Image (cartoon, rainbow, N blue to C red; front, side, top):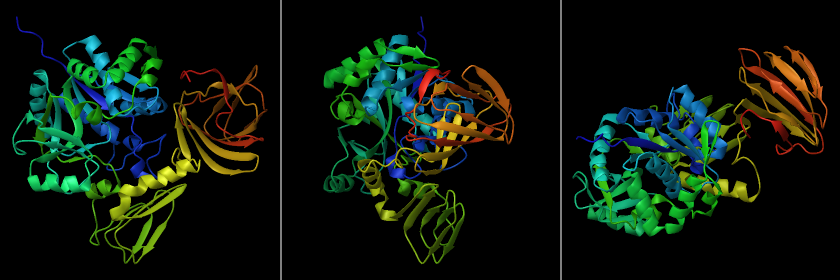
Length: 471
């Protein structure tokens, strides 16, 4: 009897923050959800690329805060999923892969996983397909297979894999070192026997959890228990509290550096991990002066620069080798050779308890979005957009009152025991301490201006009584 082919299941890791792409990438809207190099986001491109090489629906692992963003971006490209697993808290890649592996093993013990970060670029999908097929052969025999990219510069942010033949096919990894020093990288480049670890893997689900159990038993136990405790929530799967007991570590440190089963397929499919603005620069078109210009920009005597305007005019004069990125609430200017250090700005924002590393002015919610327009002592003004058919939770505020003015569309308002409808240029007042809900019954996006007044205006001043999104 011929056994059924072993399924190759994409596992999409969508939980990163991408702080080196600040100010566009932020904790609540990180780089994988942005459309920085074309009409689709990095996550959407990853989903579609996976669909080119396997028929299986993906397992997506993401942060709890991003669950509705993931669902909406899947919907935009008409992609479903096998399971969407919500990490209670980020623990790096090794525990995230373990959650998917335990889920897959329960469904089919011999499942093979194609593990893909959601924010990488692959330009040659045909070459990628061929490499996956080759890697599957190794995983079928018990290998933990990664794709190795020939290095073209001294890069300390990547893992390096020593191999016998960088031009050969599937082969054992002789050694696996994550993020070596610059001096060590120099020796690697001279040897001609080292490849970058792309961070994409093909591995048997059962092999992975077995190796994890050998090399990091605490992580294996915590993730297995978390999946045993998992609860379905709408379209999402929530691992149990045991996940918070898992150590945090990358798959490279936790498993690949230690396992005897590491294998590599040398590849050339146009890979880029899009880890910084330098990577965006590498993939961007340029004009005759060597500049990449986006948005409303006037560049005079400007060369070899990346200038991205989001919401206002940027003018440059007599500059070169700069990266300038503007959003509605921040401007970042950096030497093009120093963009790896953008994370230092993010660290400073976090240390000083600012919010610009967390949110954009427009904050997305499952029902739509809100954007801060103005604020001052005891008042705040927001523009609220509610998608057709969507509703905010039934809620009240203990510290603020609200005034709503409809700009476009129709609003159905619940205020205590009363329900009424507002049209364009109509308004209402929501007193402090009153239960209320906003619903869009129409077929167009509802836009309204909300004026908040009170001694405390934080987003945590929300007491929910009913919410269709399970918050």
